[in-house]
Figure (cartoon, rainbow, N blue to C red):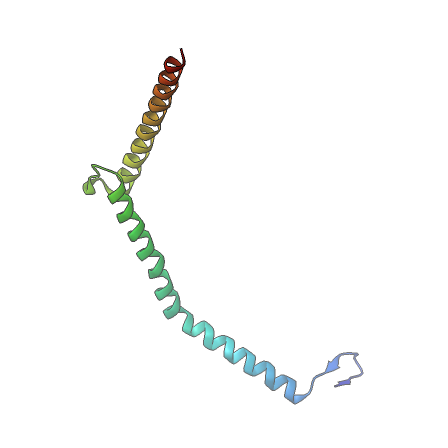
Length: 102
């Protein structure tokens, strides 16, 4: 490398050729990306569908006609119902263990 009168570094032909190759490789990657991004975007969809189906299996009395929003509401209601059942059972255990000791 040499320095010109303006103080700028003069690059060799080989360095310029390497940069051009790197740019071409980058352009090829960018041109190929749309195909890969389409395939990659389908993977999360499959994973989401699989999880939604698993949720439908776990939550009883789910209606498929209500859509995803309805499924989430039913799931929330189901979780609240389970929490209430756990509280009732914990209270029953406390009451029954207190009466056994007396």
